Length: 550
Image 1 (tube, rainbow, N blue to C red):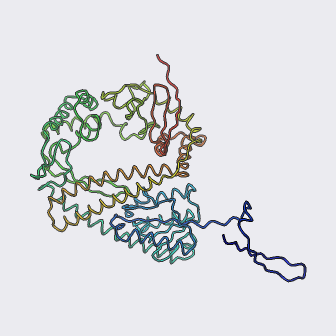
Image 2: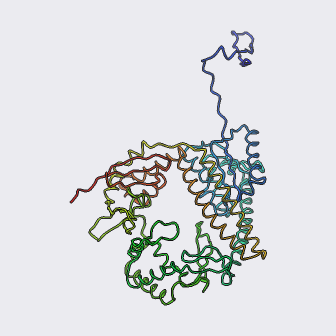
Image 3: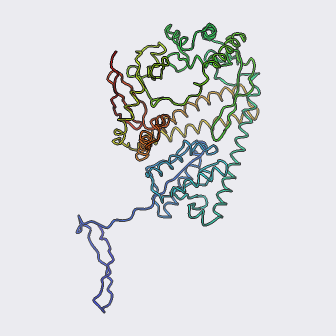
C-alpha cells in the first residue's frame, strides 16, 4: 500500500529559518492511531417528476438522473441514495406532488431533522416542483428554501436560496415567470381534456358511455346495450317497497344477511350504508347523472350535471321512487337536524376492530341514558359474530392515561428498499395508465370508433383506480417506516394526548394523529386489552378497565 504524504511545517528556533519537510508514513506503522476527522460532504437530493411513465421509457428519466449526478460531481456534493424522491406519474398542476407525493415527504423529512439544513434539492427545472398558479408555486419554492434547503435547477444551473432571493430581485422574477409559463401550459392541456370529456357526455343519450354500470345491471357488449339483471333488480324493488312500508335500512340489511342473499361488489355482507346508496341512486329509474371534476380551494370536487333521462333500464317505477324520496325527506327534516354532519366522536374512529372476526367496530348509543359503546358492525347487522358492547369512556380513559408512556418507548422503524421499489413501480404503472387514457381521449376527439374507444376508456379508468389504490397503500406504508419522520408523528400524537394545561382534549385531533401512527386497534373485550398495531410494524398492548358484571 503506498505511503501517505503528510506535509509538516516545523517551527524554527528563535531567529532560525523556517524548515518545510515532507514525511512519508506507512499506514501499517500507525495502526490503531486515531486519524483526523475528514469533514463529510454536503448532501444533495435528486427530485424527479414527470406525468407519465412514457417519459421514463424515453429520455426524461435518464436525463434528469444524469443532470443530478453531473452537478453533484462538479460541485463536490454527495448525492444521497438512501432516499428516493421520485414522483412518477404524479401531477404538479393541482399540487398532488406536494400534498400527497414525495416532494411533500421531502419537506416533512427536513422538518423532522432526517435531512439536514444546508442540503441541496436538485431538480431539472422549476416546473418539476409545481405547475400550480404562480402565487401557489412560488409559495412551494419558498417553503422549501425557508427550511434551509437550497433548490438548484439543473437546466440553467441557478441556485435558489433564502439569501439569493432576498439579494437578487431578478432571481425572484425568473422563478415567477417560469411558474407562470408552466401553469399556462398545464391549464391549456386540462381544458383540452375537459372538452373531450364534454363531447363524450353529450353523446351519452345515444350510446353507452361506460362499461361501468350499477350492480343490478350489465353491459351487453355485442349489442351495445345495458340490461337489467332480473334477480338483482327484484332486490332493488324489494328495498324500495320495504322502505315505503316503514322498515329501516339497518333492518333491511339484517334481513338480507339472515336470508344469505349474496351481497354485490366487494362487500362480504349487506350494510346499511349500501342500502342508503341504492335508495338515493337515480339509476333505479333509468337516469344517468354525469359529473364534472372541479377544484375548489385545491380540493377535488365532483359536480353533478343535468341527468340523462332513460340512459339506464329502470328497475322501479317513477311513482315508487317519488313516494320513497318524499317519505325519506320528511324523516330527515324531523330527525336528523342536530345530528347531521357530526365530527369524529371518539378516539378509535376508523381504527377499532373486533377481536373475534377482525371486522370494523362501530359506535352505538341506545337511549339518552346509555353510554356510547363500540360493537362489531357485523354483529350489529346480524351478519354473524358476537354482539358485545365496549364502553368508549373506559377505552378513552386508558388511552389518555397509559398510551403516552408506550409512545415514548415506541420503535421508530427503518427504511425498506423493497417498499421503495414497489412505490416506484406502482407510480410508473399509474402514469402508464394515465398516458393510455389520454391517448384514447385524443382518439375520441379526432372522431375514432366511439363504441370501441369508450369501452376501452372505461376499462382503463377501472385499472387506473385499482393502481392508484395500490400506490396509496404502498406510499402510506413507506411513509410509516421512515425513522425520524415516524418519531415526528409519534410526537404529534403525544401532543394531542397531553394538551397544555387548561386546554381541552381535542378528540378529532387525537383520532387524526392516531391514524398516522397506528394501522388498527383490536378492542379485545375478552381480556380487557387494546392491541395497537403500529403502521411501521409490530404492536403494543394496553389494558383498559372492564366494567363490573351486573
